[in-house]
Image (cartoon, rainbow, N blue to C red; front, top):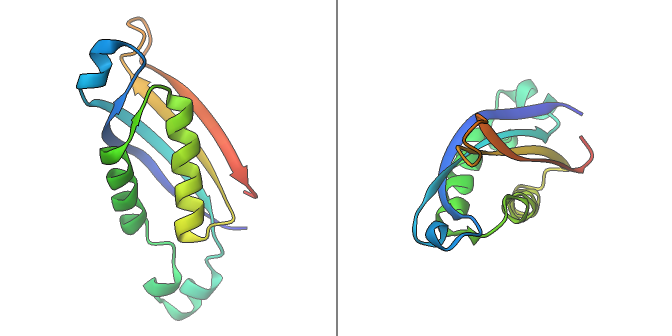
Amino acid sequence: MDRVFIDGLEVDTVIGAYDWERDIRQCLRLDLVFAWDNRAPAEQDDLSKALDYATVSERIAAFAAEARYELVETFAERLAACLMDEFGMPGLWLKVTKPGAVPSARGVGVEIRRGSL
């Protein structure tokens, strides 16, 4: 299976368990890899058959704008399910980084794999 990726996508969302985090938007950095068969789009040079990463990025931004989760884990699980369902991708890998959550670290977060990649 081929792979399509989006690296370092930054989105703002409400995320966090502390009271002060519930009233602000924070940046999450996302790295994603999607399973996708690129033969048909490449053969016909046809964007309509490709996994359009611009459209996927817009959907991720819209998801983040509406999300209000305490846990990065919940954000990752729900986003993965949303993308796989709406775009019909057979699998994905998602890394969600919350920069600045631990002062001595560049970022913390989770990585998940769902479906076949």
